[in-house]
Length: 280
Length: 303
Image (cartoon, each protein chain N blue to C red):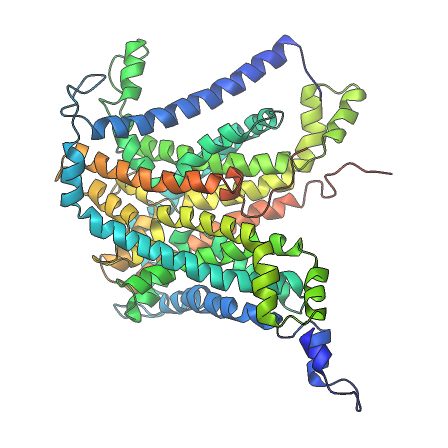
């Protein structure tokens, strides 16, 4: 490794770290503001609130019907995770094991929903869902959320499947395993860590997926993040602390899953879809 | 594999099944069909449907009426300029901050804490960041309060419900994304190349300018494109943190309003198509200029 010891290099390094520190500090202060405000009795024009209380949580819980919203959220996420796993892993297996004409086109088709932002394809998608009557229903929300998650699972799983030696499968065939046995006893145990990682990433991304859910959700199929948006949008109707309490509940739901996910995946995988090259 | 094993004995050349299997089509390939049908139904079909629908105006008129209305109404066509005026500076700021930081972080042994912290705003999502910044950057918030305590300003800065609120939220959610992408490209370059340059006496700036930058250019172009399309389709923070009727009336607000408030799906689709084409135009322009730079292996030549 090369170490620069000139004054200029040291100043430059200090400036870079100061920028990182400034960014992280503001980020944490922003989160701390929301948490502090959710426990505040009255907070106007001072550093810290006048007193502390937890009553905003009970009022937010009943005002925004959070129990119903949370149930819907987890039902949507469960359906999205299950279906994108089933569709994505099978497709990834075919793409990893076979070479056929049109494969590049197919991979491009799966890549596009990840590269195009949800707002751009969400509006035509929501239009189609409204015309078929699916929008506003539970399955409409699930269908919209699956559009980016199925390709995501495929692209995360392809390198994972490619690294499993096909000779292992051939050996199982030689010893008389049928396709079902091959899948249950050979492929599934080998693929499980990859599937788990991919599905946890899908879960974390689906909780925070605002645009697609917002465009197709009806009053009974709102997820937590959409309910939070409407609460902030109509701010002034409710107490700020009540909205902040809801935001904290949303943060806790997200962060619990993020912490679980981080035990199995590298944080950079949340952004850079495929497996990372090892750092030198 | 199955197809080949169970094929009948060859008499008149290979059977159709064998010929297909030889080209890569067999039972395993069929596993891709459900996902492909799903993608066609929920991604390709809506796009095609929206494209056709945008030429069938709700209020009647000829097939280009929606597009003519968009480009003759300042309230509508200004949204393109508003969005670009947000998206391009934000993307450049994010990218210019990400490059030096990625070069510094690449030398770190334990990057996990920093990457975890940076993944936080991405995981929390734009709505929560908008909600948090409303409190934090508000006139009574800690940010203004700190600046006033240090005597840097005498009056609270107006940072929410205007351009700067949206700008800040796009930096908070966009910078980690840009940074982590850049970091994965930077760490993909063999450090032996830099060591070779250093051995030959190149200074830090020369090593960056003549060794790293040419190798990084393709990756940076892709990072720019991805960060740009994310910023260009900004929606929740432009509504919550900006002036959705004024300076931050971005194109996705116009599209969502047309489709879901005026129930004019045709106009909404037309605006979504325009949004897609502007994004595509910028992405194609950036990727085309990539051809002007070095293309080749980024690993050290061994032997």
